[in-house]
Length: 406
Image 1: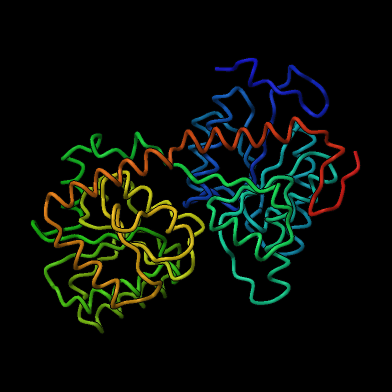
Image 2: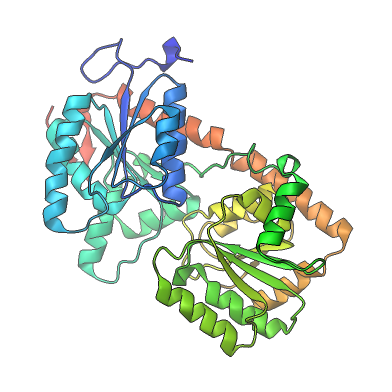
């Protein structure tokens, strides 16, 4: 419901115009960036503001349409310099025709076009820094640096804030740490029926009484699926099932390499690559333990929060945001990144837990998720950042240290 406190004077001084926020990202297929974009669009709509999203499209566009947000399709996924140049003009036209007040960039390629378009249209520009990004060469570091050039830079964890300050030139006063939040109504064990769990168990042909290890995440090397397969081989326990849940996003070669690794290590009967899952709450309920084996630091790690919200112990690589999300020894355990032996030992410990210990971990995990990673808290904090920008004079705006003329 729209209230007077939700009405903020636009840069043009029109107090009757609800603020218009344009989020830009490469696509709307699947992932944490996409989910966060939709969550914020919904919060803007609920606040009586006007949410716009620009991307190359994808399967999640229909979710935007359901909440009443407007989507504008353009090739924002492209890193081709000529396409990115065209995107500048298209974004500027969109900003001016739709009366956009703030442009919020959520990924590097669209950010490079959006920051120039925002400058030319003389509107506010901010970013959300989602990952550590690799920067092996100076050009790569420059490419990444656009994410630190917003008038406000949202870091999705304290670990990511530290990374930004260590590697990019940015005023720390412009950074706001806002952890991602999840839908605690959806990820609530009390709301998952036995029928849903049984349906998935049958679909994935899980034998009764066998411990289940779950690793959700895109099939990509840094997510650590191969580390988990090697750890299972060291475990030497064939009465167990490992489910790798997530899309290969066309990476057939990587999927085949995982299957070959499982065959070579004689755990092909243990490891099942099951692809996408539309009912992740039920998938978590099937698991005895959830693993996040990322070899690169996670900027956040939504899987770790979802697992805890469902009362499941989590084993995670000891770097990045994992240290903020997993309470070692209480809601799960950390292990040195890539350490196959230690991961194997952690899994062995997790599947041997007695019911009392498992129940205690579940209670701590659920409490941790609900107290610290609620979607409503994330949305409220993000809208407050928008309010900060809208309360300032456009003439004082800075992009990467350079003033933008009013």
